[in-house]
Image (cartoon, rainbow, N blue to C red; front, side):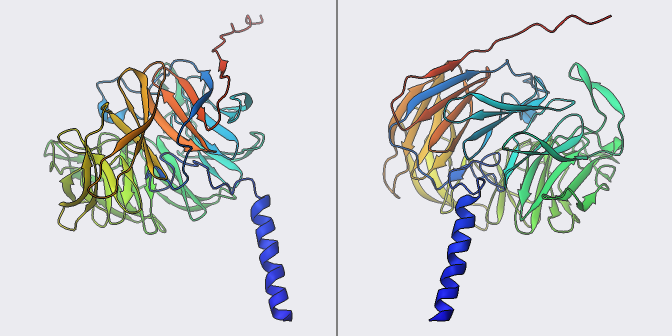
Length: 437
């Protein structure tokens, strides 16, 4: 009996600690596409019917690359994350990260960097991690934005002109990802100048490992000639128990041992499934990863099939069939797929952004936003809720029982479960004060 009472006391203490921790929130969206695998899936459902709660207009985005660089469109607009009641929004315009209240859209705090913040932050245990073109990884407190520590990704403070302002010669364009208490990011985009992939203790910022050897590798290039040009991190990074997959801008992703940083593979000259494939997006599902509509083996980086993978749920992948219908499937070892369901949706959707519980959330023409009920195998997908926003949808995230929709023009729409009189936060531009003599 005494042993049982002791165990009960320990359990109650653990439960109290769990409830008291503000970062342990089941409905969070703490990273780009939700998690370290970038699955775009959360088990937490939203209400069947959603209502507009608030709208916030932000400055028109200023991407790093023009539209014709279609593999590098990682910052077409803002990529927020959510921790508890805080929406964290990076900005490539104001060189900052801003915290907004998820209930009202009111600003809570803003942290300024020395360069654009182009990628989604990471929220973990009450802290926010984000990288900037100034070359640094920052760790701040989510409660008030106070800086806890920062780490420079490149070897020095040398500056260059980039996107109309001075930035680091080694901008941090390898977006942060966290796994097992370690935060990973990369700096440097020109291999001949050096590229650096870092693993840091997320609590202290202490270095776990750094790989600086894969930028100037002498390897065969996509144009079939050898040259000193290796991994050039630019885009999102995915992490699994054993592997770190680093996107290489326009090139295919590279694989590293997550625990040691040891280089594993970089199929730089592989033209399978489309000449010079590659891109800034990445998602991992079991033994495969997906990059720019191609599926690769996680073990060795070999391309196995052309594949659409919008959502990577635990039981299946959701994507688009070549005829435009949406489908659920499971990849097979030899690169083919076992189809579970396939369904045309009316009205048609153009992009599936995420799955929350049993519903997909997608966007279509003229700012249409829709929830689609995932069918059982052999069933029919049905649109169960619709709304409209002004402009073209760039991204969505589901957190705190709300759906957040970001447009390419820089507006954030918040939809919640209860009818409300929406609040509108218009963009207010103020002139800079005159320079003092």
